[in-house]
Image (cartoon, rainbow, N blue to C red; front, side, top):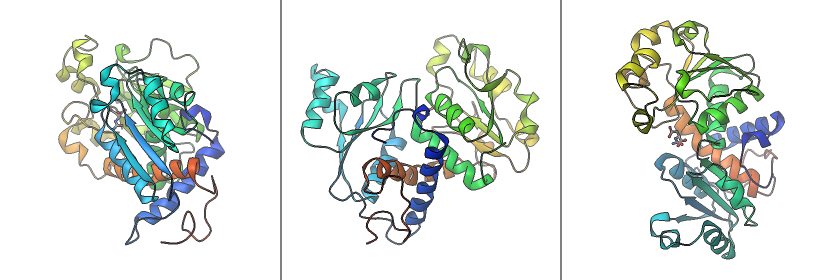
Length: 317
Ligand code: NCD
């Protein structure tokens, strides 16, 4: 594996390999010194052309806990602002001899394009509406930790599917790992064609709630309101939000998930976000070992090998 651009590039074995590796790194996280020397001497550049506190911080910590050197490339003060093309920016970064570039970009396909301009490994940290593969991996890890596995589980993803890279990555990953996925949302927020998607569609959330193992809610982006895709936030909450009444109809063992940042009171009611079934903070916590697993798989000596001494890398602390 040279890059991680799209969940579609991974088969089930590779997904499971990454989840196993994530478990090893989750174990490292629980140590007094949650750091291993696996990527000592490697340099990871975080190139976030679109802002994101949680994803950037998580990649930053992951790289540092593998002892890599981390460079935070700041777009606001970069030459891109002075009119430099994306290609020149990428070639400039690569010429300095970096091993991996973690890319977040508002345009779908930007990480793929960047991968064709550099010899470094490229990790997609979210591109437009397209993909957010490490989010899907950390979500799969969170579910398998809580429920044992995804096989045969019924998962609903509810909200703005059309504009969601999280939905696209998760549909792919969840179904590859054997889950049954149903997408829920108003017609205006579902893609116009779902041909080829291995999913069921539902516009009435109440029809499916009691049967779910996982209820996954997406953020409603405020800009969709001005696009006229739904009339008011209040109406959206009434029809699709996880209200207290709806949460009461979910199975007591079901998981409530959200990629963050949450709009409390829109897609999820404030008190429901703190429900004991909510694993939102588990998802955040899974971000670091997941990204350690990805960086290690791309840059580490052992690729997918899970170290027998339970210390990824050389075994020293
Ligand atoms: C997600 C994203 O940016 O795609 N958030 C994240 O990675 N922290 C989901 C979202 O912004 O709604």
